[in-house]
Amino acid sequence: MRPFSDHEVDELLNATEGNHFEFKEAKNRYDFEEAAKYCCALANCGGGKLVLGVSDKRPRKIVGSNAFDQPERARNGLMDKLRVCVGFQLYEYEGKRVLVFEVASRPVGLPIQVDGIAWWRDGDSLVPMSESVRRKIYMELEYDFSSEICPEATINDLDGAAIEKFRKKWSDHTRNKRITSLSNSQLLCDCGAITDKGVTYAALILFGKRTTLKKQLPHAEVVFEYRSKEVAGPAAQREEFQEGFFSYDDRIWELVNLRNDEQHYRDGFYKHPILTFNEDVVREAVLNAVSHRDYQLGGSIFVRQYQSRLVVESPGGFPRGITVENILNRQNARNRLIADIFRLCGLVERSGQGMNLIYEMAIKEAKPLPNFSGSDAFFVMLTIGGKVIDSKMLSFIKKSDAKLLDAMTTDDYLLLSALFLEEDLRSVDPARFKHLIELEIVKHSAYGVEPANSGIIFAVGNQSATNADKMPIKNADRNQHILDYIASHGNVTTAQLAQYLELSQRTIRNILKELIAHGLVEKLDNYRRASYATPPPKTTP
Image (cartoon, rainbow, N blue to C red):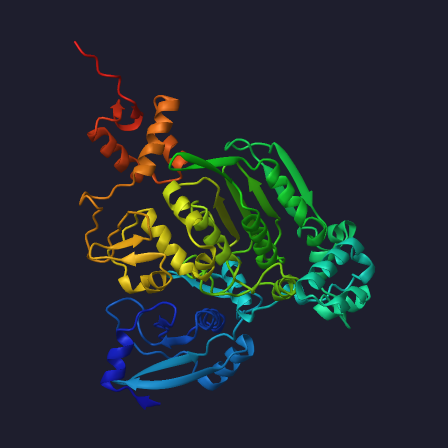
């Protein structure tokens, strides 16, 4: 037992009780099982100290503890239960004994348990660890379920037509004619789908027969639904795919394309067509879901098509380390073997780059950026908007040199989109436009940044943008969309306009205020019943 220094006492008494410190008075004794639970929670939270002989309520005081008169024996018992390193220190302060158990952190990918229960701190309470926390811990090992062997599967459980389709894609992509002459077993060995130990789950997910998948991995299905209305209820069309991916991938695009409406955008006096759903984007979204869903969870991948948007929902949250904020800059394939096989046959260029393509194509077609609203720890929900939201941006991109567009990075596309959609760029460093300026996609001026030959100047940083007539720049394109919609529909609400243009109601209200000020729109009623209409024509006396 060694004396406490004043510094150590002050540090201990002011420490925050929670994930890394637990204080108990334990003046005479303390239950060993209770100590094991708290040490378990400390280990699961990254390690910490169980302090006996200090009051847990502030202001803390050293009260002294006689618990565990043989601390070495208690330490060994805790290590036997927890299977992590536990140390201890005995301190003396003003004649009072303080016992501190120092608990190491749990191993990577493994929650610590006591008698089958992984204890965890929830505020001031000690509770069994939730399933969502457990899953996050298990995922730390970057476990690739798709590379595991399915013990009951054989090569006869794989569909020959699906294998041949993969063979052709692989051969065409690599221009390697040798692939066409390989036996099925050698082909699948070469791509890693089967090994000397047996058939992997990746092989079943990509090439499996319907009867086999329904038996071995019934939730590894993709469900397509077409919904003509937003309200809940049965889908207008539904197809379920419970076979290997290479048996149904083309069919999903065929179903989407059945109702792929043609839109038109204006460029001067001319109108040009554009499809609501881009084939590359749809295929990439499905590939992404198949590659990254959690096959150890129940639930299916859903591809839900609405009139102007596509929603792809897949079980499992984002892979470890991936968030909405960093999804374009970080890659972590949950099912690496599946992703590698897709890459071999050219379905994806580089593992993890599919989302960049989806973002870039959305901007190239002047459509809303991908939206992950509704995603949580158990499901990722990707919404792809199909409606053109800015004709000027689309016209500008269509007129740009294709080679220059190919040289643009995803960040370049995001900057270009931010310009045309008039996002607030006052906090953006003008240096970020360097690459776009080098490509001559935009040019810098004293007033701001101007997309080449567009005649529109946008403020960046602290600049104040003006057009050639030195008048403040407005987004007349969106204004005209609103006026056209009101003219064709009569009285409308902000909610209807927000859904039509896929903008926030706040943005819609700001545009309407401007239109009202110019006498182009009038507001009817107030507050919740407010609607907007074209004012009646003025009569001359």
